Amino acid sequence: MAVYRFRVCLEENEDIYRDIDIRTVQTFEQFHNIIQDSFKFDNKHSASFFVSDDYWRKGQEITLKKEDLPLDEEEIRKNVDPKKLMAEVKIAKFIEQPHQRFVYVYDPIVQWNFLIEMIKIADESPKVTYPVCIKTFGTAPKQYKQINMAKEELSPDLAMAGLLNDLEVEDEEIYKTIDTGEEAVEEADINSLEGEEGDADVEDENAEEEDAGDFTFDEEEDH
Image 1 (cartoon, rainbow, N blue to C red):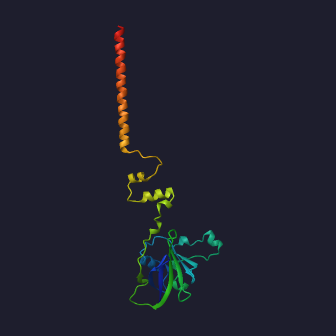
Image 2: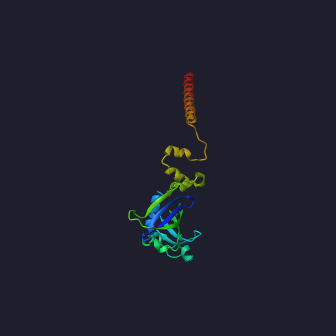
Image 3: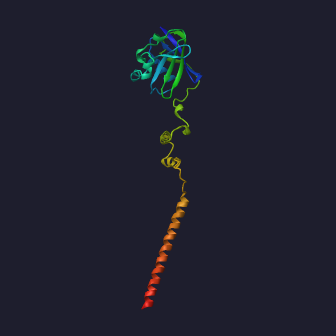
């Protein structure tokens, strides 16, 4: 049986790629899983393949999850073809030319984009379990690096949420980081203010004692 060999490149850096062999009768879901394994991603998010032309323009979508099958209003307005499910579609169904291309998008929120091109049709080896990554070139990027936005680019609410999610930050440090718009009062200043307040209380007590003494003396003088 024939085997397709695809080169899967990271769109933002085509020098990072994986060559993957997959049997013609295997599904896009199996293709998705081997891509996840070869790039060391966690396979926890939505994903889609798009049949592509020579200019990487997206056509038919083949999605991972059933809940992603319904078209949204914009897709309906544009007369987009109904989506297909990866588990139900074999690779061979969409091989239309010797260098067939696909665009693979993982985690639509972060938008990991991969460019896929068939580079060879080979014979199946009975000693190999397919699909298989046969070549690795370049170090795979960290999956979640793109969500680490600069703090100045975040809204106050998101910045605070990110701060609270930072396990390295203690509660005391969080409050130190919040800018209240007021000048900070040092501990020494507080102690000084407390000392001055105490001195004032002592002076008031002494003054009251002196007044009491004067009143007693006046009474004795009248007698």
